[in-house]
Length: 217
Image: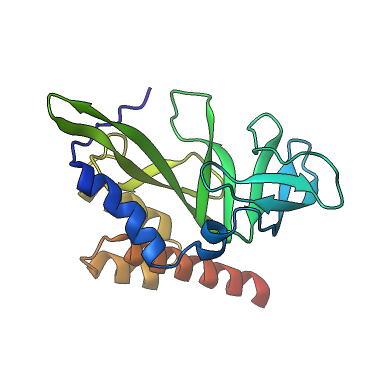
């Protein structure tokens, strides 16, 4: 099973990420109007794509129902939905296994799509008030990558990396993924940055290069 360290923070720091997200205006419509409907789709476990309406409660997960349906809105569940998308946050969520020692599926945000895919997993823990102080809580973010829909590898996190190896090992892994695009691979090798923006740039560029190559054939 995957070990996820508990972060110790104050109540103030626990609340700041939420405040920042809304200050940036990421989900203004949904926050102000929880009954607002958003367009989207689900891909069910038989592979059918179904157009849906989504809504985001003030608290809790996105809910959906098929367009023109009188069904009640319900949360996407692993046993019925393997992928879904909503205009609420313009994000595709895909049911995948993140731990090679497990068979448990989890919904991950797909950040980059193509020959190389990048996914995000957000793991939120509740804070506890003990001995006059708040401890625990916060959100740990894990990023995973795969090529040609192979096994996921943990590539980055905002906390301790437990399954991806050292920074050097992870950089070498990425370099190998880019190796069939030599010019891009060398640029990545010389680039000392390893933040999320940099990773997304190289993955997006690689996918665009591969797509252009396929179209030119």
